[in-house]
Length: 463
Ligand code: UD1
Ligand code: CA
Image (cartoon, rainbow, N blue to C red; front, side):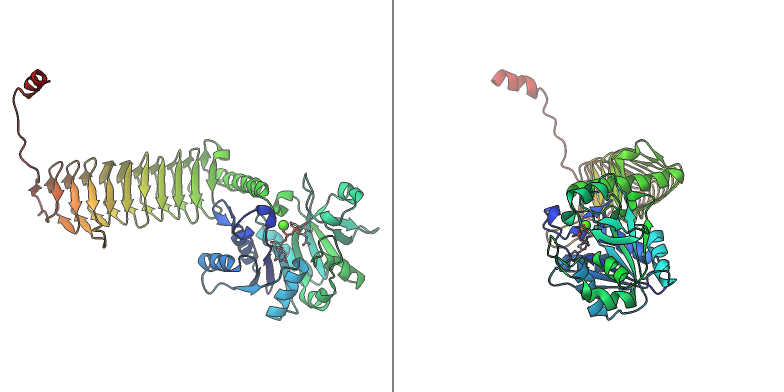
């Protein structure tokens, strides 16, 4: 489908009271602009033009960090923000688009569905109308442009909230969602006719509909069955409101797919996460980004995974994991911290107050209590005693630790890297291991213990 999407994301977002671009604010861990770009791409748009302006660099960086370099996304700069009509004019001038179906989307419209965008594009490409506009009837229409119909029930014009008479504000309840489809030729021919004689002194894109009607063109209304698809974000309160809607939708889908939630209102799972059936999600669980969790797992309570993959039958209790890979039958936590590059193989156990970074923990190996393991390759069935640490950093460089299979690391062992501890080896509790340990050996590094008999009694007599 040769449809161009123009996404308007240049506005100041004043009502957010933020130092960041409005569209950079996240819903379930994903920036608002990416929700809208995703909808355009999954609808099959072949070209996505994002109009940037306020905090342009931040928005550009978000896009280039979120999509591959060959994604059909380009940015156009609207240096002066003179309104949505101006934003589209700038986009048309910069790209030279003057034909074909064009879908225009507000950048603050994160819950728009790809299916809606697709149907929209069809409306105009099938030559049924020169323009179509998405409308909704939210419980509170305040702030939205209101649809005014003519005697035939067709859209006559859109009246912005600030331009409404009190009567219009009270009686016009159907609202403009900020999603439009245009015949590109008609759009380009008439965009210059939008004026700015209104309460805000801005060029309003919604005025295009009245202009096209006056030019004798047909304009269609497409009413959203679920008004929530068309909700916009202008304030922090609306950001929270849409986050709750998005959360409920994702969780409802996952429940339909066989995931159990102890309380679906207390789990925030991003739209791109996958969770397998019979997995139980406990309260205060967050899955951010590209997470993939297998079947029969227990997530949480208090677990936060970012871009992490988890196999089947794992339990992640109070675990924070970032860019980690967890295979099958692994148990973590409570209070485990898995940092980027962590790879836990089948049946591994990472216990309480344990931090792992850029390390492989072999099959069936255990790091149960109070440890830091970094830059380490650990074999199978190793047991790491409480309080053991890999001293991987000398203040300047990071060094590797290698531990073989079935080795027993005594409690409170300091492994000063680079160091290699073989298979079937043992380190004595409290040792600082600075030299390699051969297979099957005991490494003990400890001063002799002295016994001073009768000491307590003599001390008491002195005091
Ligand atoms: C807009 C519509 C309103 C509709 C509502 C739906 C106009 C004039 N009004 O109002 O009818 O009900 O959306 O949510 O369009 N932007 C630019 N450049 C600009 C101005 C805005 O790129 O010069 C972008 C903003 O970043 C935003 C989008 O356009 O993503 C909409 O602008 P916003 O100011 O939020 O418009 P609303 O007042 O919400
Ligand atoms: Ca808005």
